[in-house]
Length: 184
Image (cartoon, rainbow, N blue to C red; front, side):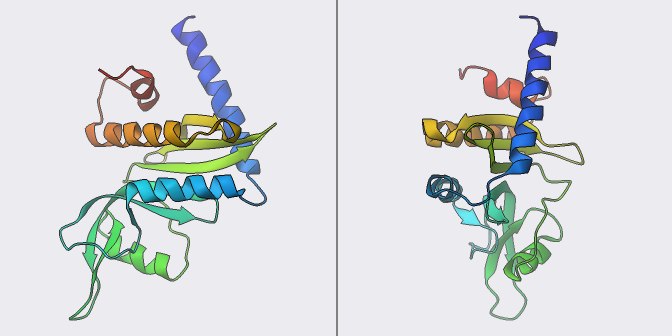
């Protein structure tokens, strides 16, 4: 198969996935909820959680009930003399993102922060998707799997590899190429 043909198939798959994800699910199944909770647990800290004062790393947060965003974060000190340090998005206004999230506002991933999004869609069956977002470019599909086929380990592996790619940002490989390359 030529590289051109492979790219066309990849684009077609992405279009179908976007349509399925846009339709979403009326209500998350227990399996979907468990999968999102597992991803959150694997990453560790959630947006607005208490954090050590020198913490930097990955965090998660929910967008609506059916999406989890994964991105870089760092500790921010809340105002006041005895303010705790909390996990916020790794941007200059990270403390504001904590405040907005705690108040129940929708926190959009900032354009200057590469991030991952886990969500679900329904075609003939329920599927889980992992998307990569950067700048103002449209989300890129980097992983999809049937929920009926127990995607837990495959999704965790894809998230881990995508996080490695985001940190390293190899100039010679796109994220989908990096993920499809066999591990050394």
